[in-house]
Amino acid sequence: MTDQQVLCEISDQGVASVILNRPEVHNAFDDKLIAEILTILDSLNANDAVRVVILRSNGKSFSAGADLGWMKRMAQYSLEDNFNDAGELARLMHTLNNLNKPTIAMVQGAAYGGAVGLAACCDICIASEKARFCLSEVKIGLSPAVISPFVVAAIGERAARRYFLTAEVFDGAEAVQLGLAHQMVSHDELENAVSEMTQKLLANSPQSVRRSKELIARVAKGPIDQEMIEYTQRLIAEIRVSEEGQEGLSAFFEKRAPGWRRD
Image 1 (cartoon, helix red, strand yellow):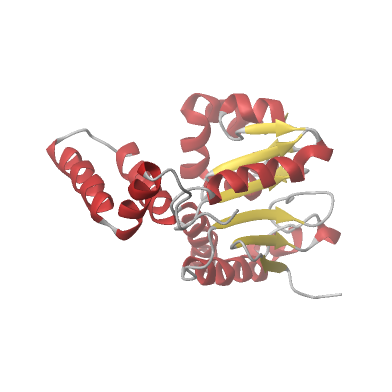
Image 2: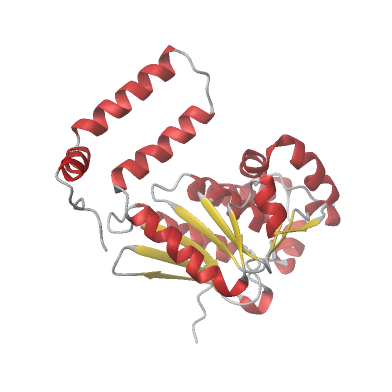
């Protein structure tokens, strides 16, 4: 039995599973868990052998959000201490959102509070039929402040006006409709669905996936001006002449698998 709050396993294919490992408290966040996830994500970001990152949890819940003991402790701290503490959660969300690998959130159960932020920060979110989501902060006199840029980007302002203010619980089907999740499957099919999505990602050029993530982040913030147009021109030109770009085009015309494929 390990006392690590976060585990990391990397397969021979370069698939990293980052596993929240506090099932006895429904994988609730505290400062130690946040620090451990950050250390792991920074390491994965720098590891060229890693192709895909899956965020998942041990136990019944994906994450219950903030740990009650941690919140009670922080309530006794000063405004400055709370500001600095919130900065670590903000850094976690920013790091996950901008990871240079494709990320999949595998939500098997309850995802409350900050856990909704984790799901929103991942490129792809697949939910079990048993998944339940809730932006629960207002129930206890708080606000989903740090996660809000990422959640609003996922579900839009209109849906945020409802779910941030009501703290309603919604299921995986509703999460798909809102844009928070991309797919809901039966609980028994969750592993297979994540595996199938992972294989789709592994079939693609690592460089192209990384640059496409950068492209999305840049284009989504607009506007479509001359600077934006020149950025997109430069991006495709650089990719075309790159080693992976040349390999991909050669493989296509030669009707063979490109060198990055790991079938």
